[in-house]
Length: 518
Image (cartoon, rainbow, N blue to C red; front, side, top):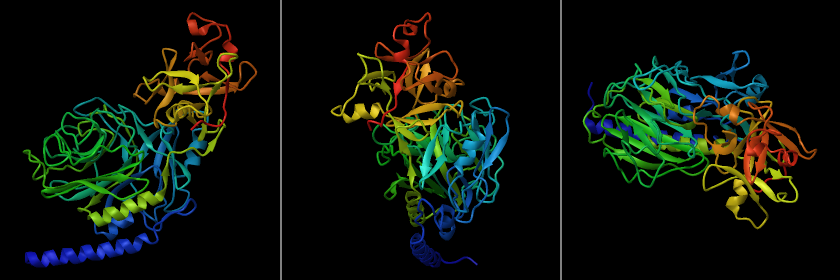
């Protein structure tokens, strides 16, 4: 029987009101603490709103209150053994300690992101596509450490060349069917490459035409579309176009957003779609666009194919970078009320990039690295230079500008190439690491190069001068972090380079690790 339009409208209104009330009631019991997970998680909220999850991926926490399976799989370099990483408890947080133990003394990559929805829509290493060869690289399992609800966890750090995909899915929207999706990204980790996406894509890894994708894009690529400011923006990758609204290029209503933890939302149905976003640590969602499909041929109706991608474009374009923590895809077009309730759950989860201690070389500790060379440099600290990406030493004291203090503060991380050693992440530029290149030290994001993890890993030893600590390069074991003429290098005790000078080498390569300046 075909219902008259007014009956359908009344029914939708009643359902929406009921769902809103149910969601609001559910939120009263949805606030997790550092020791207790939420009683309703994002996919429970979507289901209550009539738009159930058909894919749910996270390396940090359960997305259903009752889920107690694996979140992701890792593979270690030393013997290629694999291990599933699960939860501390049902509906709770990732058991990151299991990863730490399994990868001790070596390195690991993330091989599988398991689908929590029960549909089997796992994400694995992306194959070759129309735009680039493959298989794609896999994410370093230690490159995106965070805490969630006070618990250690790891995100998926996508360097250029990294990508995950599933071309044989179950239950994902096809054609013009309605769907929704959200993801939590690191809003400070992006570039203008194509394309850091999460969502619906082609099933053959090739560009099959306008409207054959519907995925969340995050970055500052301006070739196909843009919003206000200089970016980055949350946009929709609909294939052959990154859309920030109804127009093909600029839509000023889509703002620049760079929250450290960013909630990004795209949803679409027959001739309607929306972009929403917000701070994943606090506050509510904003709607950046809601309306009809783009005013360009090929996007109404849509021709979605139902594959799932992460970190790449539909044709395996893989020049982008970003960091992913969790995301879902739904059956049906979620209401704003449902998404608002999901956002409340996300902010209550407690995402944080902060350190867990200070002044030690334990991963998670926040430190500064103080030079020990007298008389020139005992008031100097290792810092990145805001004028470029070089790492130098300069005098820092209590009267120094806050920016200088922050530039001289580092978060100790497990070594990216060997977890028994260390890497140093910038405290005020998350996702950027101290690394050597042509023996000089820089602050860089992982560019996808094969040597980055090794270049950013240093093994602590007793101070070469008998004071403090020295830090030996893991891939140049005769070279240590050294300051020379106020610039930082890795240097050996004697050699062909000026910075290998034996004069004051032992002092120049010895560092104190006092409490951080910032």
